Amino acid sequence: MRSVFLGPPGAGKGTQAALFCEKRKLAHVSTGELLRQAAREGTPLGKKAAEIMKRGDLVPDDLVLGIAKARLDSADCRTRGFVLDGYPRNVQQAKDLDKVLKDMKQPLSAVVYFEVDRPSLIARLSGRRGCPKCSASYHVTALPPKVAGKCDSCGSALVQREDDRPDSIANRLKVYDEKTKDLIGYYKALKLLVTVPSNGGIEEIAASLELKLKGIA
Ligand code: AMP
Image (cartoon, rainbow, N blue to C red; front, side, top):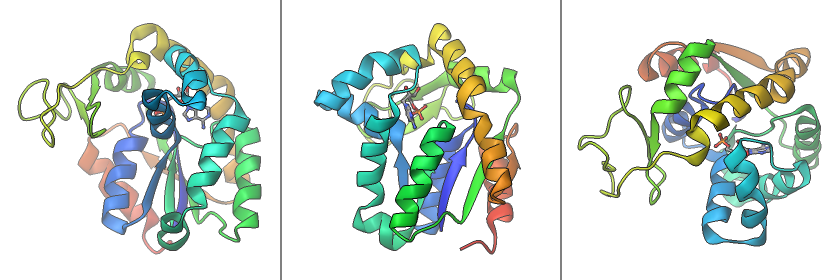
């Protein structure tokens, strides 16, 4: 299966992508994670992206296309299929992606839209914590670690992403409304859109996702 997980920041795309990829043995391609990794490593791309990400703005299309294309072209994506989490984020990126996948002869099977109301999004984003070492993600109330503030997998101290602070959250939601939301109509027109109501808990959303994607290979 080759799919895109679409939705506003805080919709749970990353959490659901990790669970779904584990279950179906797919490659999880998160452009946000690839960019954060580049920023941690201090590569030229990472340096360029870091300030933009901190504000919650979109990194330029050509830079993100470069990392997405390199990852999609890797052996595991080609053989296992993938979930794209956080890419595309505007119509230009969707067109770029169409072209890349067409050239690879690997068209999308489905685009999943995680639909969540605004108050739930803000609660999810502001309570989110992550492990800087192994990238595991938690939430202070919805998915707390066994020991407060420590990663269950590697014991590192959990951190809040800089872009999960109030100013950045507001900007990211604005960017979503202005640029990313158009993709719902774009993929609906291509008859690829599957909507998963996502105000509930992690297990409930995962069950509903599984049901909606049943039979799609
Ligand atoms: P995410 O982890 O998906 O929430 O992404 C975190 C940040 O990385 C975003 O707020 C953007 O600054 C940047 N980013 C991730 N994916 C993209 C993309 N497809 N296009 C532009 N910027 C992106």
